[in-house]
Image (cartoon, rainbow, N blue to C red):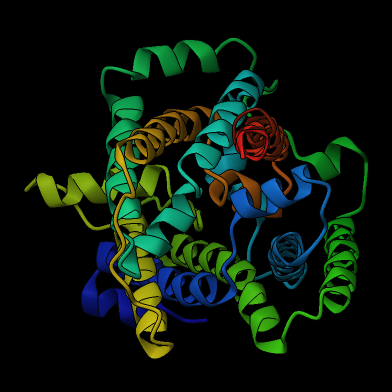
Length: 356
């Protein structure tokens, strides 16, 4: 794909932002229509169920694996050049940050990506929680919380100055990632058939995973053609949320992939909601609900920056290139969410039942 004419016409930074916008549009439309959500899947799993929400999550995850690993086998990208792989990873950050993020997304009733999608459909609870998430993420990246994040992340890091490539660490061939993705896809399709999930929802669930591959391939292509260094990245909502917030607050901020990604998700989700007449303004039901949501957003903001990504950034995007710390962070997000659901929501339901 020759993008040099595009770069010459609009410049490298606008091209990066355009690629982010394209990735975000695909993600926003697909996530809104499929109702993809790690929180919903982990809660369903915590309650001993393997139904539609788990099936949708596995289908998204497997699609990302298949498309990304397939793109690498075809020479359309090189996962080793991705920034997530080219810098040291933090095992301690993945564990602590993943657990905090998992707790936070249950309290906030949605991961950061899901909050962004819901906010675009008129959910004012998600607007407030999303803003809190973005502010705390920025504080953790370059503000008052950054020393604590740096200290926790430095407790245990990967060796060799790079993140761990799980496929290489297990001495697996390059094609192994593709076939692992197919195995997850088989599980997802089995659950989908069992739960009688409609074809349209399956296609949109796959679209979320496809958007991750689109981001990787587009930024890799830009990096090969641009004069200045370009980060090879894809969909994530911890750093991008903070960067987008600062872009609109700082006159000297520059365009980049992140700045296109977040607006793209909002626009895509809004268009999908309007097309299906699902746009509806919703607010907090009471003060305790608002307090719970904001607390969850704070935990997610700090946890995501510590873990090296959110449920999408580490869980799907990082997982699709088999970054070791990303898989560990994803596992810890599931654990944090399941424990929180058991201790907070399920106990609350039992208490309510006993009182009645």
